[in-house]
Amino acid sequence: MNDSFLFDAHCHLDFPEFDHDREAVFARARQAGVRRFMVPGTTRARWPDVTSLAEREGVVVSLGLHPYFLDEHGADDLEALERALANDSRIVGIGECGIDARFEQTLDRQWVIFEAQLQLAKRFRLPVVVHCVHADDTVAKRLRELALPAGGLVHAFGGSPQQARRFIDLGYTLGIGGSVTYSRAQRLHRSVASLPDDAFVLETDSPDMPLSGHQGSRNEPCRLAAVCERVAELRGQNPAEVARHTARNARRLFGCQSEG
Ligand SMILES: [Zn+2]
Image (cartoon, rainbow, N blue to C red; front, side):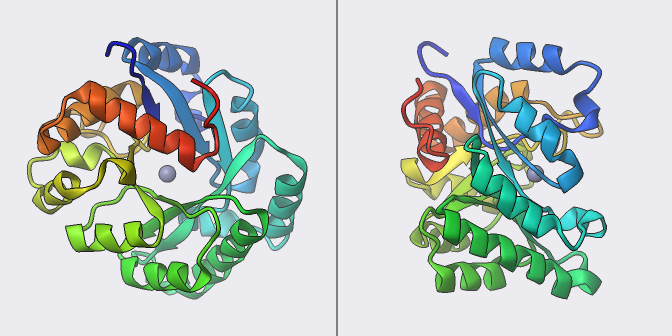
């Protein structure tokens, strides 16, 4: 892709799914032009693996407590998060955290843990990595009230142009991933076509969210090139241009402006 490169703004490369071939996964990504990676933490037990990835060239990390793993979060995990943020300058964001309304019976506890992480994002002036499923309205309302200083990423955005506009107006960046490769995702296609160049980043959410044609198989960052091509097509731009804008947006979001 000439001089431009891709930044996978959300990939769980610490997950055990990659333990047997992590080097090959990084090699295939580089081969496909993906040279930067943002790895978000999900549970306290996984944080050491996440932060050790920050030692690699091109990898930045965030730490957080993901709503999907609610049962694994202990009472003192939020204090541990606060300590980690105070002591480890490699952490560039807070998350993955948020609300997954598919799990209705745990919503109250999800909100307690999400709110605590939003407060940490405010205090440490770090961007927040938001997982938001069937909860766009309530999450957007809370983000508006808090006006976090560094904004954040609304990961795996799949909503309408109006929902996109609302998050952008609040200062948030949208994560566009493999969903865009499905022909049935027409509402998302309209959103992607309407976004300003500086409003979104590209992400795979590896090992989850496989692209169209790869259902049932492990997702990995090398597939970001196909996401970029589809986004470029929907926007009437060339892929190198989309790669350049989105990598720049991700660097700005996660405060890694200086590196190439
Ligand atoms: Zn994720």
